[in-house]
Image (cartoon, rainbow, N blue to C red):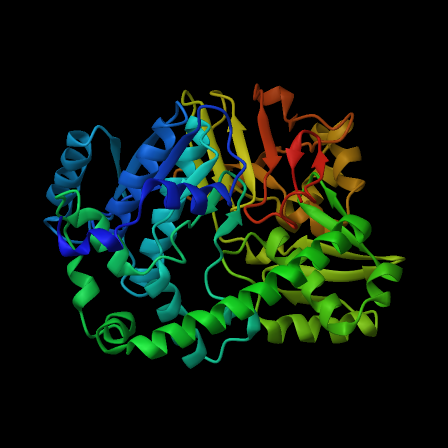
Length: 458
């Protein structure tokens, strides 16, 4: 046996690591994100054996960002290697223009969205990522250098709930050397991404120079911060169930009396989580913005944070998406039934007869509904029944002129309430603009998830 055999991660040990992140369905279907490097390849091999032992299967997803000329060829080689191991694989391509600045972050966002969308389309509940112990230590040190607070120093979580899938990292307690040994004992080779050795970036420099003792210290500190974060999040989740009401139009209210009874630090966490969910952001709102909002709430004045408006109103604190912060527009054309993700908050289902541009209703659209007789009846009643700031952030369809400029309002989502229904302009023959509020970040993880209109909202 090779000398590394005693380091290899065995099937039973891996099963214990993965099972603690469950429960999993009968005959589980897991997705594993695979780059072709040692960590993700080892994860795919181990997860495949785990799934097959339970009469299930895995699908390996390989994202080709198209940033290097050879990336497509490399992705096909990885897919062929997996096929040789009896593992189904699919390549996901990142199409479209690539930004000149912030490319790494844009690539990361695109990668996760491609993975999430595939899982959502195929009804897969669990997405496995291959981050391991060394990655965790490097993340801790990078965030320490950036001045992160306690939440940031907890680094990566082993399980993260999103709108479409659970992100699972079963290898966070496993050092890279053990994954290397796992492949070596099976006679498997891997291909390291050349960017992992590019010393222009901080992570490769840490990886090359990180002493073993410092790595161990970093991991232990991360575990302490993670335990503290988990305990606090359980407390925040319980408060959410007691104090927060989520509305199907993509906003929520926090009971003011409940909020005021909380210690300031805990109240700030509740507000931060509410903004994180309603704002549709990829990252938690900046603490400076949350602290400013806390001051505004105390004196009953509106505030903004994380792409949201925060407004004390009566006995509640309203948290709603800030319409002016919604940059996304989507052009649609007739004859193409379309399912879209808009503003990272709504899933849209458009009838094939719809044509125009999807963007926020805005104040112009809200005023059109209030004064245009074509929108009389349920549409008028629905929009006037909402706080104005909520109405402005609804998804709406607008006409587009030949010059590309926006024209008149054609349709607005009529909401999920009884009597709301899809709101359109019947005279123009449009049939359906259906939306479902599905926040990417739930307010609270299971078992505190609440169900509203068949959707898991918090």
